[in-house]
Image (cartoon, rainbow, N blue to C red; front, top):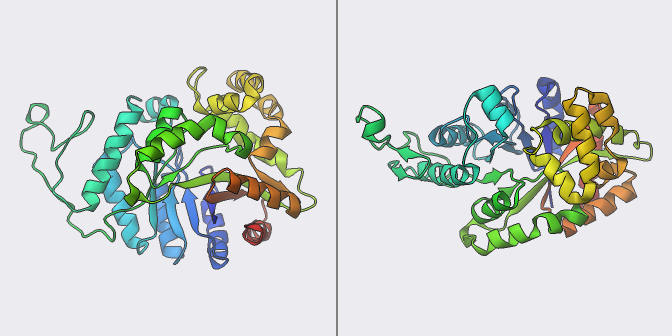
Length: 346
């Protein structure tokens, strides 16, 4: 099992970079930078590339709608270059509220667009003259949609690698099936080990049945809130605001993918209550409504022995990379929690 850390998109990036440097010395494998409607992930990843030397860097994730597929490929190749081959491209669809509300672009055809984006990126990295005629993307631009002067081009620079690993953040059955078929890594959210197979197992197996063996095994990369010790039970409360935000506020009623996951885990009534409170402006009450049981089972918070048992449960459920978010405001404790995680790995 690999370990990584997940950086918040809500602030404090410069302050956390020193902790990234410290955990890199411990042998942590990867650091992911998120991108929602925050600062972009790319500029921060470039900064991290200059400050680190061995840790893998990844976007976690950039939405496919906000950049052309070719620009995604160029950006990934550029980050792979400045990091000496340490970059991993994480992509996802985000949701209609952010895409249409913040970026002003339609949220349509997430499955078809994701597949085509992956195919175009890999064509660019192979340094082929780009010619792609998909349902959603046509490159060069057809003459009837432009000047007619477009021609096939290949990226000027030689990419460090012609196959940069791609992670896809996906939750719905069809999206997860596609991920298991075409991506190097899968990034689910709020992963509950004991219930993951009933939620995603069939989709994963269907996708893997169509998977190209050249991709290797699917890297299942799971984010967890982390606090290790005999006096950290209060940190369950620290993890609740994010769960409340996603379950309650990241999407409208009927179009919230995170709410759907909580419901499929068996927390449907609670998820409805959290959403009702959050969308009506009662955020504190929504946070308080998040049950300890849900937080505990999707996190690594507790004494060393308990955390070790939970790590084993994640491993048994097929997780191959644990992406920790230490729940602390203290830099030394941040590093200590990650160090203990490393020591407790199977």
